[in-house]
Length: 246
Length: 207
Image (cartoon, rainbow over the protein chains, first blue to last red):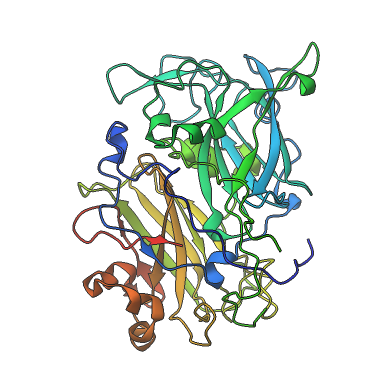
């Protein structure tokens, strides 16, 4: 990948109104894992606006295909076949090329392939549950997978997670680093999930809900969901904190 | 030039949950063979990387003093000359044998993380020519952490540079500076524990 033109500004400050607070007691795990003291604001210097470069050579050809990347030859995982695709953009609506996206999820029975997950839902021998890709020129990405099932989890006595896929996003700047979760349009469990509800702005929750997209569905084969991703954008003015000037 | 370039909103964060290892360090979750048997960021240096070899180990403690065993930790740092191997590095040619980024799980049994890397060179502070003390940027995600946490590790032997460092000096509570400085174990071997909450809570940054 070639060098970009000299960087413009630092990143727009985070809007903490849309992020969950560190301490969100209805999600019990946050109680002892939340810093009590204020974050110290230090702004964006070189170490914050820069970030690592990932190349397509770092990845294998089926890394973004969870139907194939763990299945035995001529076997398929059980469940609804889906494509999840979209565009990774920054807050200025610029597509972000070369970003690393990693996902992980439960199988169609709501069970994770993880040595600590003991849920009664069975493992699927043909499903690993992780995938990764690097965004294309305009920020485009896509995965093929199985729709994850909902599952109960130990928080309240009867809390269930809606079907969801975890997304780890790595844009060009280390201060853009973000992990979030994607939900599915129409899932009645979204509204009552304590983790979803850590997000204080109810409209912001909508940003995490993928829409069924019949236009990109493959007939007689695979449904498609569109999920667009947005990371922090950058300032672009003449007067920036750059050691070498603008 | 647009006056209001911000059109969209960053997606809200959600916790990485208890199974972040599946996605980011799958071997630690028990997926031994996927991705060719390794994870991105597992090896930071090779034999050609320039600079002083160091290793960093530590644990991440919750508010009860219990190490967390389901987290990941990432490092981002300059090379030995103080240059970043990034598309946005315009000051010079960084060491092509050093990506500058590392990722490790906190061990599922012990909670310990471990990195082998090099000591970074110094970099300037914001728009000034003033050099910062050498440091490594750190990002932590885990179940119960609703938005990934940024902190830094500084070096205990850099007494003078640390004393002049613009970020360390900016902390209102100077009695918290020690939470950002690694413990020396032996030459080039450091321990850096992160405390999420309570006594000796690590300084976390909004960057």
